[in-house]
Image (cartoon, rainbow, N blue to C red; front, side, top):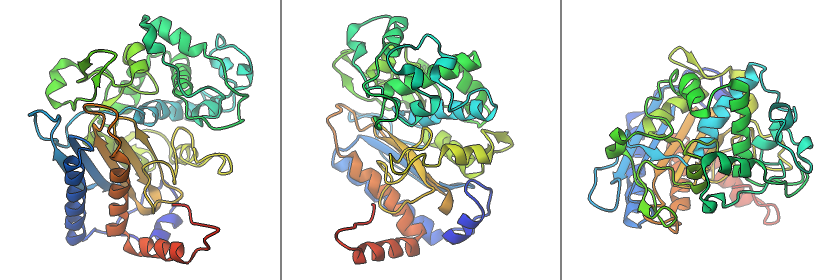
Length: 397
């Protein structure tokens, strides 16, 4: 593979040619990933999982383990369909937002009320679109509106009427309500419902044929079940796990997308190819860089929609300009332009209960394995620095 310095020199998100990865390294990567995922199944972290390590050219290693469910069920494959949970925020809403910003139809620094004049309340006139997608709007994380058992329109009205907890910019609070509001900005500006916009402008052009909201019953045999949900009283298969997303009708900016490892690989390739894949363009390279750059490192690790290292699931060795995100159901996607690398992990760790909490070390192990095998010199250097660092100034993981 190319030396990291060479990739940095060519510019983040720019097209570059990757040297052939030795077959021995690809084999080591597959063997290591298989061991990690099989250990996760054995430890009851999840019934099944798939991991993909790839570059702008496509997958280098794709490994799956386990089955769709703890009960007898098909084995996991790269075409298994997973509930993405909060990956919806970046795969869906952020993809739409970056396109509309690039087209000049949304101004990140405009007040949200320019696009949603009915979004009123104390301090809300000061909240910008940028505040929403960097989680510094002052909105709370979430409310359990689903427990009211209202119609989707009424649930949405309650979400949008939620008052701010603080003035915007006072602190970073990861907010589902903020993402929902950002999704409504996308819909108002585009004139399309979010699912229709994404199908037409993102998933269709990029060939992400299995990425959608509300998967039909015809796909049920490929969908990994999530929780035995106490609110709905059934084992969820093809229904969004997030309760508020379900109460909104299954289509929301904060959760609700389903996808496969194959499809997410195409999205990751587009990001590593400067926004383009097979003649289709998600966005310009400059817009990709804009949305994946940390906004204020003294305030938080957030980029626009995306998180950055040392965010959850990024492992010990990813650094700027890497970016990624996780999902509550046990999903994660990390992309590192400096090393022409993407790492996908898809699981249903909430099956049969969300109390399963063994996903974090699996996420770390998968990302770290990719770096250790493909970039051993980088890892050695970082570990040496960590070993010699002053105890009073530990390195960021």
